[in-house]
Image 1: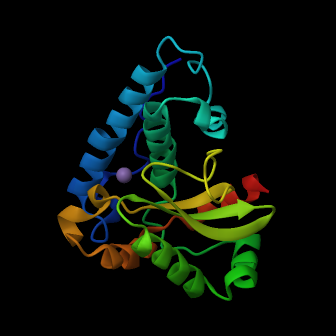
Image 2 (image 1 turned 30 degrees about the vertical axis):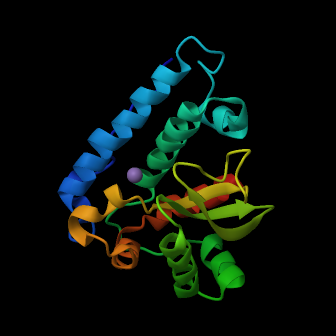
Length: 200
Ligand code: MN3
């Protein structure tokens, strides 16, 4: 079964004014679609065909670069759309407590994630992961992610922030830190909390 582009779980303009509708439309319909198409192309007729994304990530060093880039791109964006939303809520249940235990406060976590995103040279992602049952902040280059066997810091991602220019350039131009500040207004903490529980 070939991979397919998941529908955006809300309208393109749902994250306005923090993330504009045009950026969301291009990001989802063009960029993510291209990762899906190129992943299917790269896997066609190989023994990677039929594997799940998680199986591919866990053994990514055995695959060509096109699978790493586009498989990572597909996994990362599929996660990204679900951890965004105009919910205006905060971490729930155990997650609130473990964030306070690990980082001191939610604001301290945001600062750490923003620093990880702002200092990632070139394109990449900032991550909140569960590693050995504990929360950790990390970042990856390009479309890599912490599930990949080649990742410097491995773990299960429960929140990912895209710091590729295509995620913010129309509205924020070169001001990546401003985008990183704004995105916390549209984090879907219910989804992050759900992913935390599932990762344990
Ligand atoms: Mn992107």
